[in-house]
Image 1: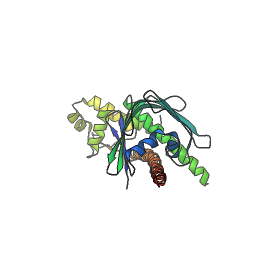
Image 2 (image 1 turned 30 degrees about the vertical axis):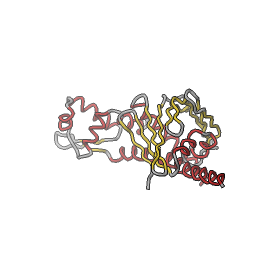
Image 3 (image 1 turned 135 degrees about the vertical axis):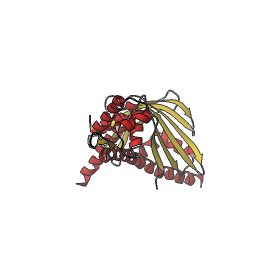
Image 4 (image 1 turned 90 degrees about the horizontal axis):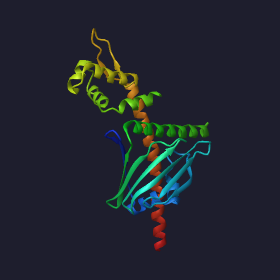
Length: 154
Length: 112
């Protein structure tokens, strides 16, 4: 069973959906409160988020720093544009690898779905090439984490 | 450029994606491909060259014709990559499921 979908749409969008067995308020809080974000927004196993600063207000900034405890590290910065508590977040974000990637414009909605939540993330990249690069960078980090995990096994 | 960069760069063009969709139905020659797209043969040939260099299609020699078909290896590399990105996200959201369950449990505890 897979609860998540990930699709490209048109030339510049990536759309992710995921259902959760908790109400929108809880899912929203887990996306805006640092002590909760640090528990899950970690990607592949083995990564932690030692720095998580979020000012969830229109114009507020956020900064996430990830580490694999093995020399691997990168961070993301962004700004909140629109905030509708428990319903919708619009923000821009960029990865620093260490050079900043072009801005990714992201709209996240949290809709009631029975007793749970349907979350939809719609990302808009400046152009098709940037989207291709963003997707490709995502893989590099996934692989890096996989290798790091492999190292601990051998 | 790695082959994956080349593949995603090739996929960033709507005409090239449409060509791949057409080839998913079976192999086709440049002439057969040019017709539905209302493009000249040289224009189609340029797109095919990009797709071939990215490892997404392969050409076969059939007398004077060079029919094109999808290249399994190149497409599988793109597929594997998407699967890996999915996996990272899925692991995050599986973790979020547990965080949400903990939040609910501590809330219920607070009510008692």
